Structure formats: structure tokens, C-alpha cells
Image 1: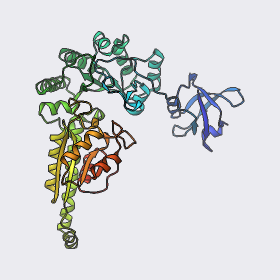
Image 2: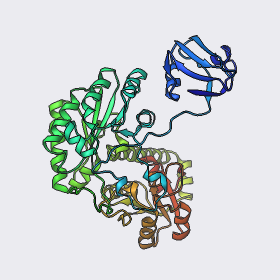
Image 3: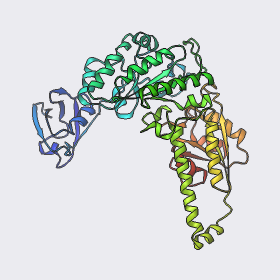
Image 4: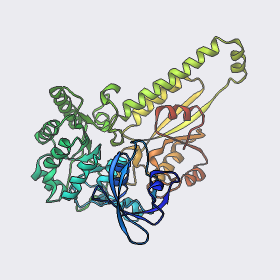
Length: 451
């Protein structure tokens, strides 16, 4: 049920007499579960709306409208309370979190609605048959699915969930319903790799192009693993084996179906795939293709700088202004996780070469908080960053780091340290980029960057 809080004037809802306090009970006879039902039917031209009016009377309205016309309703609650995870995965990162952090970091979400709305990965193990029918009926596409393996018995073992072996049925059902899916395999060495990975890839590719991509990402392991399943970390040789396997399978499929996390290439000491390989970069939030995209954005920003310089060289008046404002110098300390530090250093050097007077230093910050096996930039804590800046920051006035080191819509790091505290302790200007190559270049040049 969706309770109306506001009806837009002159909207379809207003025309049929809906008012604040009325309750939407159903659309076309299907229960109004949450805001997704409203969003789906608000796009349709014909449907039946079941309403309980403020006085208690229930009526059914036949709606006929143009596709781009809206009911114009706002509700007291979207009914999207997060559905939580029922699994006990052998590689669960949250199980490896230390005690005493903010409560939200311990929430294990596994909500198909957030997968559709926000791109969150879900295992589908907590779906009822009614949920599966609803996904197909409302065309909730795309979905982002944590598959891990298509071997049902192995999946039950890895997720600790006796219902996890329904994955093959669910993937097939959604594909037949026209739902597109992006899938992921968290690769646990000795569990779902080798021939199991081959099997998973081939089973998923049977449903291509509805199953559009299969990302493979390494297990994230912190130092807080006492009592948990032992999983071996990946090294350079193992990473090369995974890269070789993915390339051979993609050649077999004649599609860039398997997309590996950039971390595999960092570990192997190899360049990531070309920019074009990643298509629409659908798995970029998974650490897949971000390096290629960042590189392209850096190159585009540098090309723009060179283009502006050519214009100045061809304009005597602009040359005089440039000479008057010459003497640009800037020393920037760049924060990076250990994994991407060499890559980041190469990108910074390209910008240095294009811009005279710029000096950069990339600090590969060791993750003392979670353990050195956690090496990505996004999981660095404020405390570790402060220590790194105090140790390596002499002579540098500005510190640059990407937005994803902070909590979304906040200035807090994972350990609760604030951005303001970082600035106060280090006495440095701290610039937060939006994560793009263009924002990175602007930060290095001292230009405005949106935090």
C-alpha cells in the first residue's frame, strides 16, 4: 500500500479526484508493494488503479492517459526498507570488519530493488517466487547479480545458503523475460577458479546478450580473518593465469564478455585492456575498466591543455597575458592505494610533462587499518592517510585524493576521521576529485574541483 501525501495540481491524479491521505492498494490487480509499482505503471497508458479513499471506501479507477502524462503523486513512504543478506559467504568482507565502526558499515544488503535502482550486486538467494514474478512483470532491468559460480552445490557451499543453487533457474527465467543482467564472480582461489570458472562463464554466456557481462574480481581480505575460511591471496603468476583464461574464453565467445577487475592486471604487472574493450563501462563500480577510462580522460584533458596553448601561441595579446602570469609552480602530493600507485604515478608524470612548473609525488599508502592485503585507494582510512601525509608531505602544499575514499554524501573516511581533521592535522590544502581523469588534472593545476 502506498499512502498519498501530495497530489500535483492539474495532474491525472488530480483530475480523477485523488487527495492527500488516499491509499493506492493495487495496480491492475497487483498489490502496490513499493514505489517501483508506481514508477512502472506511471509510464503506462492503460491500467486499473485500486484506491482506498480517506473515508474508507474502496474504488477502482480505469486510467487512460498518454505515455508521457503522469499521475502526479507523492507518497509518505516509498516502502523500500532494505532487504538484508541471508548468506554466510566464505569471502564476505563485512565479516572481516573490526568492531567499533559506524553501524551502517555492518549492514549486509541483498535487495533486488536496489540492484535495479542503484546498481548494487545481489545474490538473489533471498527471493521468493513472488519476487521473481514481480521482477519479470515490472521489467526491472538491468539487474546486477553476484553469481560467483553456476555450480549449484558449490554455490551453496560458498554462500552458506541452501537456496543458492536456484541461480541457473533464476538467470534463465529473467533472460527469457527480457531482463538484462550484469554478473560478477568474486574469485576465491581454490574454490570457484580453474575449471569451475570455465563452467560458470560458459553457462552464463548461453544467455548472452541478456547476460551482458561477467566481471571477475578478487576476494578482498583484511587482517581480521580469525576463525574464517582460509583463502589464499592472489599473486602475479596467478593473476596472469586468470587474465590468460579470460582472454581465451572471450576469444571462444567472440565477445568481450568476461571483464576482469583492474587489480588482476596490477598484480600481473600488465596493461589493462584497451578503452574500447569495456564498452559502456557497466562494471566500472566493480573496479573494472576504471584504469582505461581514467587514462583516456587524462589524455583528453592534456590534449585540451595543448590546444589552449596553441591558441595562445597564435595570439600575440594572449602571449603578453601569459608572460605576465608566468612562473606557475605547484607541488602536489597524490594519495593512492598501493595497488594503483605506479599507474597513478605514470598519469601524474604525463600531466607534469604537459604543464611546466608542476611537481607531483604519489604516495602509496599502506593500509595499516585493514591490513596490507587491502590495497585499493577506496578502502584507505583517514588515519592512514594522515600518517602518510605527515611522513611524506614536507615541501608539498596540496594533497589530492579521489572522492571514493569518503562516505557517500559525507566528509567522513571509513574510520570516522573527518576531512576537516585531516586538514587541521596536516596543515595542507586538501582537494577531493570526483574520480575522473579530468577532475584529477584540474586538481593538479589548482583549478576548481567539485567535492
